[in-house]
Image (cartoon, rainbow, N blue to C red; front, side):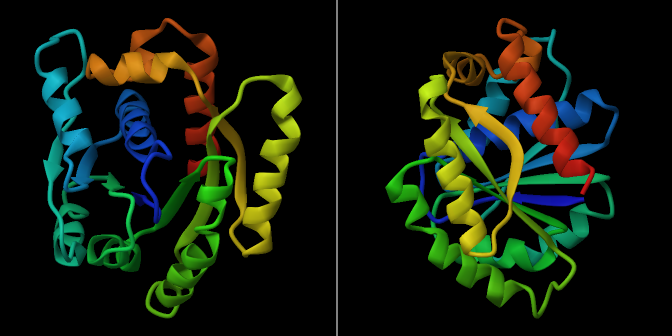
Length: 212
């Protein structure tokens, strides 16, 4: 599996989701590589924090940008799963990774400025399918408000994704402080273990995505 976690806009929690999915995969016994393809090196720096805590499982992480096709094809010979954290922009990095991905995940906040990117995401997918027709593409609503009164907003965001031919996962990642806490300590919410709801969200996201 080559999972590309990307999008056209920053701030939707792509690095957070990529990091947590990578740890979940590793804990499930998969040979996984986290490839940070964001110039900001968010996931790469997060991985450096992990090195200072010998209680955390070792997670191979690399950093690369630009045309990723050859790199990903090479790493796919060595790893059973690769999670690619791509910066929030329409770029050569994102487009090249999409052409060799098995799965593409677009995290989106249920906010107008995120949903306005759906048109271009649909366009990117339309460019990808002729060269990668078997790729599985999904969106996931991330940083969702936890108040029950906001569920309509979340459902409307999912409907917006569907209207552009981009199916949304059932799983939702909510806006919880524990995600920031885990990021700062170089861990995942599952490893941190202080918020069972967040751990369940990642497990549900991972199992749903990997069952497609």
